[in-house]
Image (cartoon, rainbow over all chains, first blue to last red; front, side):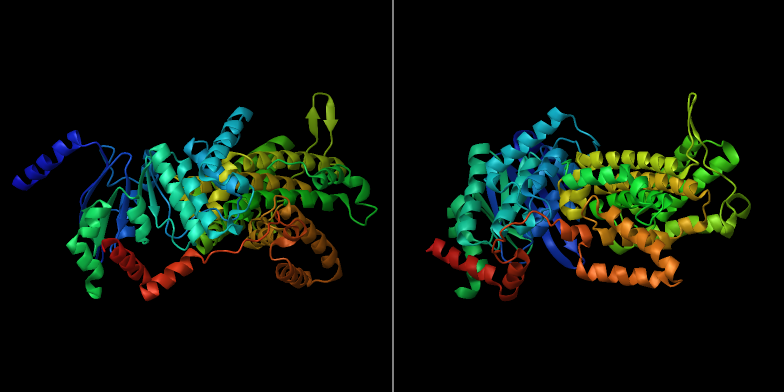
Length: 267
Length: 348
């Protein structure tokens, strides 16, 4: 009784006072005996650009899967825009604006760049079931596709087959696909993984522009610390499924625990 | 998507004039009719197989239901050709729509198994239900009837006139399928084929769209079945059997399942080869099998996949695939090393 009261007391003011876009309250996820995520609490405001870091197996991808609904939490609550979404489907969350990219690139490889984006635009507009579109709606769809290709800088490759593009461009297509869904929260799982220097610069620039120019809330997992410290406003460090530390780049660099966890072997 | 290709215009001209030139070429009109009928079925099956990515091995069920629906309408209900077409098509379409939920969540081999199982169910019903379906002997004792337009009579008992009725249905089926494939619904099907997981994460209820594809495809296949029953004024359980389902798949794969017209090419080769070879030898199936193996070995994307390759691109050197990269990183733990390094630099 006391406990429940305490939980309510702890939550209620937060729900009223904080404008948190996304909030996780004491979320855990176990896979058998593996405790992938343990008692993680996390809050993120609209318009923030944030990073999640941590060694392999720290639970970063599970953390994303919990937010997107790919796996349900074993315990704890997940709030998005003031609503508890812990039991909601992937599809529901996507329509609410939680959109992600994957660690392994997920696109429609045999379609052209514009066809890829068109699927997303039509989905976002709720047109998928339509067996026929009037000409002016088709025009609207094409314009939106062109607009998105301009934003991500792929307009000159619109008719190329995505499977034949360089890896970096495929990842950009994935971001374009995510943008079609008008995300309120964009989750990027290692956006620069497997990229060369030029491609990485391009991607970092894109992420920064999406945040600066479009005010998009972005949460990304990244292994490359120069990127994380370069663009993230706030960094959350996961280790063995727990939040080890959270703060600005300066805080994290100075944090003894993080240094111990990360650098233990080196010292 | 709807681009008029010169070859396509030639195709339509050839189909419109087929009774004029098929005879001198050594064929006969009913052969052309059969190609169109199987063409409707194969193009319809390809909505599921080639465009949505569901390996259906049970489409003969809907073909056969259409055939029995038409035959029984003519035999027991009303001797009317249009009604037979409508009843048969609706019967097959209804079955596909009701059974869709059983298959829509299955993928790959499971999709194939469950569609075969459902198909065989109808086969055994037709075999066992002797007094209505004629059992193993098949359903006979009905004839397609002339069409009446007021005082004008179009007597489709004439083979050439029946060909044009079938061509008319073929045109309608093709227009419907092309419009669908050019629509958001069609784009969604292709997206599901390409990457079902990605489609799900775009917020698509993928199973519902697979269901829609299955229902529409089954309905159009049933239309082909009704026309087939009336071509021979006969239908048998063989029209429901999985061997016919398999033959449809073979035709599609031979012709090219990624191309809209691929199935029609496959059907033409299959039906003509069958007609010709079966007059030479009883063992024509092994020759067709050989032909199939050759085509699959030589043109893995089907015949149309070879003749009309996709837009050619200068291939770009690819950065190492993400999967490889991950495997490498996982192995030597370098992300930790890298991040350790940069963190160390950052904390200096």
